[in-house]
Length: 133
Image (cartoon, rainbow, N blue to C red):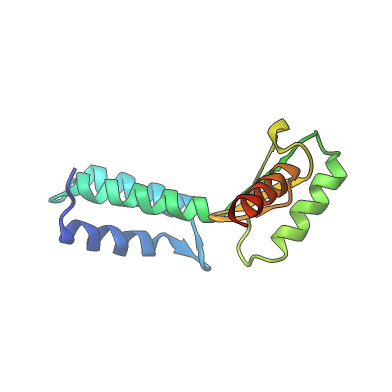
């Protein structure tokens, strides 16, 4: 669906109004979306579509994914989450998964930032260095 400039502007304005204290407020988003659906202003489907994309992007920025090759103990996992969280001003939404393809080590992803300390990444880097040199 093609979104008009007017719809984009309205969506961004509405999205900015959904923030409280520098963080996206879920209740404000719900209220904004429900009122938009109820009132059905011109191009409201385009506005809803754009708001959805903006909310997804904001949630992506706040997501923390920790991957390890083997299951981690709860206290070790909590320590990693605490250290990563200390580097970001907004609260992160943590998720944890076991990924045996990492061979060893950890991969930590916050939004689009990735810190890869896995054995698989190091092997891939060595392979690339040998191919280019």
